[in-house]
Length: 147
Image 1 (cartoon, rainbow, N blue to C red):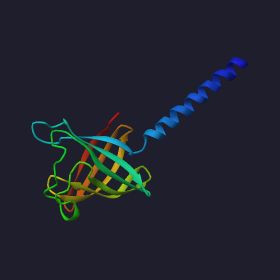
Image 2 (image 1 turned 180 degrees about the horizontal axis):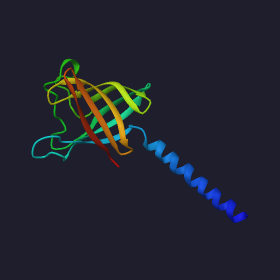
Image 3 (image 1 turned 60 degrees about the vertical axis):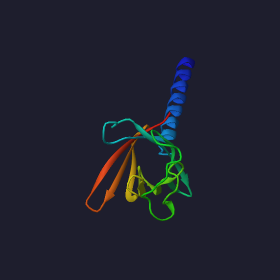
Image 4 (image 1 turned 45 degrees about the horizontal axis):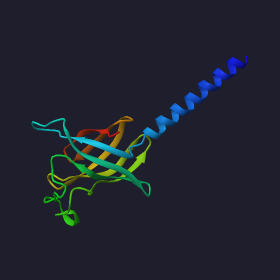
């Protein structure tokens, strides 16, 4: 009887800790690897974006650029971001958590200076889907969590 109690207690403790591990990993907060999506380097790592929460909204800023100088400026950006450093720039803004998705956000494409509506959802704890929208369609982008 005592052995059964100890066994059940051990199983319960394991389940509690594994569930809390999933809960901690089931957020978009963290650092994500952004792949190159076209050309000869397709699939290679392009940059890292750090997703963070502030006042109930989620934002993403560039924290690492691969194959680009650290002092690269956003020449095609508009308004206050024009000619500002891309490294450290907030490129995802105003995402709101709604159930298992993050909606209502904007993402800045520094290549062309355009801003698009976006939503984010977790495919797995280590894979995130960022969907961008424009008036005639949408496009999915997949980022992986940096460990």
